[in-house]
Image (cartoon, rainbow over all chains, first blue to last red; front, side, top):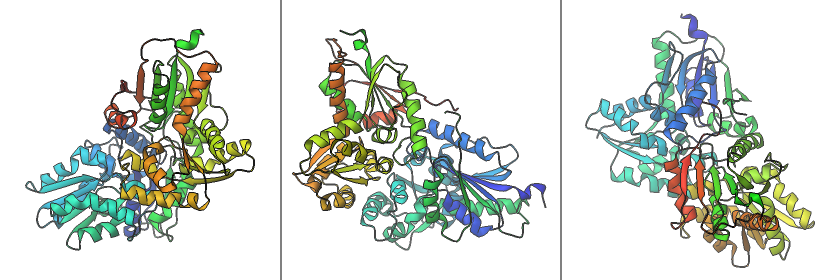
Length: 275
Length: 275
C-alpha cells in the first residue's frame, strides 16, 4: 500500500453541480476522504470567457492544494472543456476532468456513431468534446448544443418530470439531437443529471444518457486502483464541503444532490486575495 | 456653473441590467458623459450572500473612482437593497441607488397603499423595500416576491410577449401580487423592464409598473440640476462601457438594452487583485 493512499480526493466545481460526481465517488468508494470546493461566490462559469474561467479554476486548485490530496477531479464541465492543456496541479498528483471519462463512455456506448453533447455555452464553444470524440472515432458525428437555461432551472428547483417550463425548454434544446438521430447523449454539465428524467423522456429509451460527473467518479476509481492508492480505511471517509459564498445558502442545495443519508460538513472559505 | 459639472456620471451593476438606467440617463441628458461598469465576470449578484455582494460592490466603486465622476448611480437592485448603509464613495460626491427613487415613485403612484416588489432573492430577503416604503406610507401593505428565473430568462433572450416559458414562470411569480391586489408593482431588478410587456399583460392595465433603473435616472437628473452640476457641453457626451469579462460577449447583450442608435465603446477591465 502506497503511503499516499491516506490522502483525500479533491474535487471542485463552480457551484453545487459537481456534487453529482461526489455522490458517485462516495457510492463507489465510501471509505475515501473527499474534499469539495464549490465556487458559489462566482457561479456560474459556463457563461463566462475562457480567460476568466481559467483564472478562477487555477484559484480553485490552489485552495485544494492545502489538503492532502492524492487525486484531483475537475467536476466542472466548463473548466474540463476549456482548460485543454493540463492545469497546474502538484506535479506528482493524479487528476481527471469530466470530459475524457464521458467521451470514453459515449464512444463505447454508441452504435451509429452519432453522439450528442449538451453543455454550457463555454463548453460547446470550446469544441473540446468533438475533438476528443473524433480522436477515438474519427468518423463520428458530434452534435453540440448549449443549454444555458438548464443550470438556473436546476438551481431553482424546476426538476420534476412533470414541470412544463423545463419540458418546453428541454424540447427546444433537444430538437436538434432528435433530428440528428444521436443514439448517445453526453450530459456535459454536472448539473444536468438532475434533469435526466425529462431528458430521457424526450429523447426516448433508445438513446443512452452519459452523466459526465458519474463517469469521472468511475474513472477516478479505476485510476486509484491502478496506482494502488485506494484507502485501506475500515470506516467511512469524511466528506468536507467548502463554498466561497454563504455556507447556509450552499447547504440548502446540497441535499438535492447528495440525498439525506450522507454525512458531510459545510464551511465557507475565501479563495481570492481581493478584499 | 460648478467646476465639477464636466465630470461623468458613474454607473455600475453586476452585469448588463443597469443599462436600463443608462438608457434613460442618456435619453434625459444626452450631453452628459457616462462611465458604466458591468461586473460580468461575477454576475449574478442577486443569488449571493450579503457579505459577498458588499465586497463586490466596494470593488466596483473603487474602479469607477478612477474616472472624474460627479455622481454615482448604483444601478444594481441587489446592491441598492443590501447596502443599506452608505457605501464608500468619495466623500463629497453625490450618489443614488435604485431603491429610493423607485420607492418614491411607487408611493406617489399607489392609491390603495398596496405595493408589490419583484426582485432578486437577496433584495427580497433584505427587506429594504418594505422599510423604505413604510417610512413614507406607514400603513402600506408591501408584498415582496423573489423572481430568480427572470435574469437568466432575459439574458437568454426569452423576452418576447408571446414567449410561453416566460409567461408560465411570470404567472407563477405574480400570482401573489394579483391575490394581494397591489395597484403598483416595483420592478426592483434592472433586468426586469425587458419583461415589462409580459408583466403588464398579466397584471392588467390598472397596475402601474415602476422601473427602478429609469426612476434612478430621473432622480439623478433632479439631483444634478439642484446641485448645478449639469454639463454645459453642446455636443453629445461619451458613453464608456466597461465589463469584467469578455468585451465581445458583453457587446452581444448591450444592443438589447440600449438599442441600435446609441454610440458607445466597450472595454474589458480587471477589478480584483487576484491573479
